[in-house]
Image (cartoon, rainbow, N blue to C red; front, top):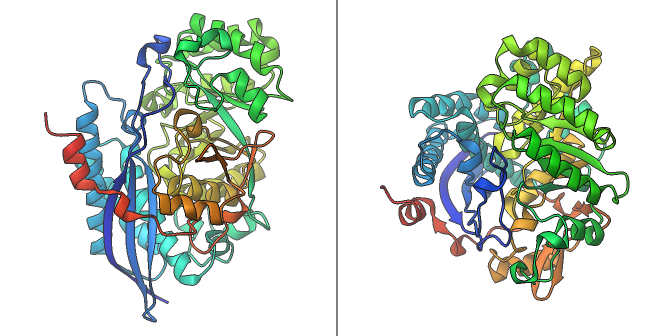
Length: 486
């Protein structure tokens, strides 16, 4: 069987203004608080035909999250969004130039390096380029699986995507990727609730005149009580004094949860190893009980320092106390391979960094573990929003067999309010395991801290119905309207 890409169209869907303020972290604590954020979701619609004349669509989508992708100073959000859109269009053109292919993995191998070079030629971060490449990658996977009338899990399990790990890493020669997947895709996940640097912890932090009064939890204590969350991801800012003070307050709230599990995320906040090491010392000594519940620490250092091999002795020593995981530093293929050699134990899965990358990293994790080394994957991505981004990421998590994931974009955005009415009708018909209706709107259904999403195991990549393209805006038109040239 062979395939041909007939066309690729790019769209944007905007969300409603964010319901809650959010701070990514960084020194200064709440200094980068963002209120009423709009979270534009970039979408790809690809038309695919096979050699037997069958035709269908493939889709993908993700939040155009330039604040996370590119943190270089002196670059406005308008500029970064324009450049990201340009790069997505460049990736589209690269795929159309290689329109005919035998397997999705073959097409990815032919185009990934070219997209990376296009990003570097325009001074883009590798993470930004990986984002653009992953949008194309997922749309192709969706289309091929849809033509095969099979869920993506079965496509990977039966090696119908043509993935050959040994073609990328010599250590993985002969690796059977299907043998690393579970017998059945995981379809139940604990939600790891992110606690931003400005999030209200208790009712004392949120006076009545500042409340949304929209029927949803608004404080950390309310999420613990009403949704039963017991997995938590805490943002730290790189200021040990302020972080430890806030961690102490957070512990007073989450200690009431059943067997709480904690991860810390610095989002590159620590600019030197010494400050991070002192923070870890104080954390263990001053908040010993909380420290014992920490599973791992994510991206403590900025992305450039992370992959500096000269940091290896200290990184190895610190990672023995708490496993360290890379995220923003995982921009290019092979970053986890390089980071693991330095002493980092894990890397994050995010569809926006690449599905093939995560599946290859799953094989690397198994390889390292077989050698007796510490290695793991985690499920991250705060603002993974419905429908297409959220569904496709849950499907990948099910292949990777991860039991919990960072997933509370619903906290900062009001349910499915960004969808059209026809799409909401499809949600009510096809995905009642994953969503629940409250007061006329649909929301992620969280019970005892978990979600169920077996309904996503449908033909294609987790998207059971075609998005309402007519409710979106063409990507070029959107960026001209929202992010004009200064």
